[in-house]
Amino acid sequence: MHPALFWLSLSVTVLLLVGSLVTGLRRRRRLHLWLGPLTIAMLVVTVLATEQLVRAYDFPADVKAIHMPCAKAGGLLALPVVVTGLWLWRSERGRRWHRVAVWLWLCSVLVATGTGVWMFAHGTLKA
Image (cartoon, rainbow, N blue to C red; front, side, top):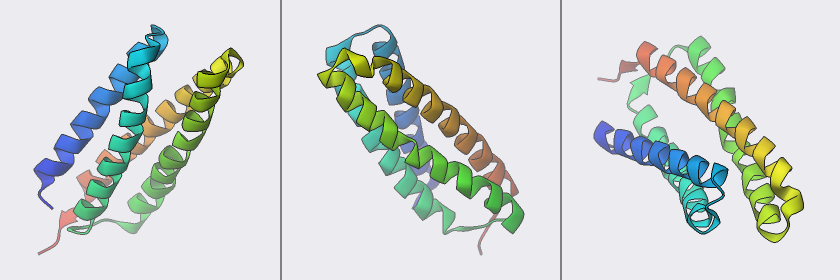
């Protein structure tokens, strides 16, 4: 996989994430109901692109051992966002839980992204 495709997918994911956050906070529900699911779908595309790119690198085991749990947490914490989002779609009672789930997920994604950049900074391209 060409690295440019990874960076493109990551950039689109970030733009969708920002759009989802802005429309969610401003309660622009109709647009948020499109951007939220698109963000999650694009995150999956980015993770798959990352998996392809990782195959071309060697990483120090200790650095990878720190990043991988962070990356898995970022992926898994998307599930409560989806579940609470569906709850909120049906009932206002889900609003607080959805907000908590989103902020926890966002923090985990930021940590995963930071440790991922750190991991790639220590990686070496395979010959």
